[in-house]
Amino acid sequence: MAKPKSPPLETAATDPGALSGLLDRLAGRRVLVVGDAMLDRTVMGAVDRVSPEAPIPVLRVDGEEAVPGGAANVARNLAGLGAQALLVAITGDDPAGSELQSLIGGIAGIEPWLAVEPGRITTQKTRFRAQGQQLLRADRETVAPLSELAEARILGAIEQALPGCEAVVLSDYAKGVLTPAVIAKAIALAGKRPVMVDPKGRDYTRYRGAAMITPNRGELGLAAGAACDSLEGAVDAARGIVRRCGVGAVLATLSQDGMVLVDAKRALHLPARAREVFDV
Image 1 (tube, helix red, strand yellow):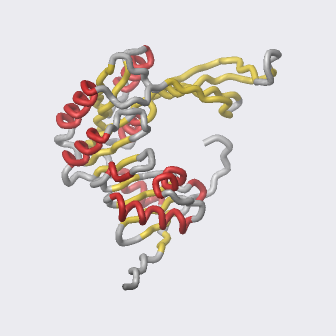
Image 2 (cartoon, rainbow, N blue to C red):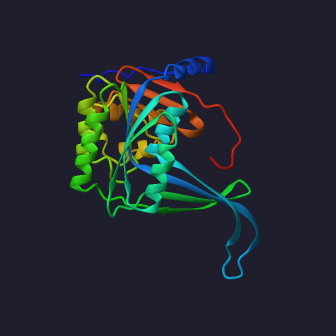
Image 3 (spheres, rainbow, N blue to C red):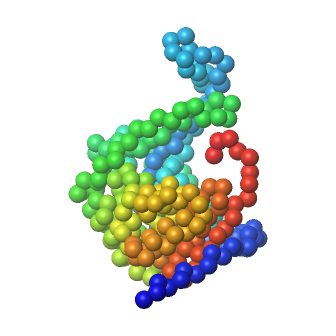
């Protein structure tokens, strides 16, 4: 029996006005965000000499800032677009956790449902920058799965926060919050609400039932077990994931190649507009 042909790849018309109109519809919507919250810290300064101790630049620090990152950044972006974001996440009982909770609490449009796990290190990414260019990133984190008690608190928070929400975002950075039980319960409780997932790892079957997953090119290739160097290769990989993993669609970001949106019926290419950048 002949294998059915896949539908051809279509190219979407890029209309910034249409996108703006869709984003405007987020205003006032309640969205549940569950995942790995972290603290993004940036240390800024200038480099004008090399260390005499080693061939490394010496950063003369003149400023520092910290903002919510990871799942907390997703919630911050939703709030910035006018939505009401309910953030369910974990922090450690450390200074970074306290700082992250304080930052999140000061953002209008975010309703935090944050639990503290004693002994856990709050994920913190510190970037060192000079003259607008990143020199180094240093990470402090715990990647172990949640304790049974912390997992139970997350599951309870999802159940309490979900009523009244119209969509769910699972922001997975592989830092231990989105355990199989948390993912499964969030998707099951969502019911007919769309669940969007920013995935990690090789096994996307754990996101079964989600409306959409959003891997980048590298993540897509890792999950598919195949190179996604070409647009066609990325589309084939996305089709395989939709078929095998029981998700509604794959929206894959492909850097200079834009994005592809693939579901069981079609594949749509959204081209990128070129910009000259040296540090994303």
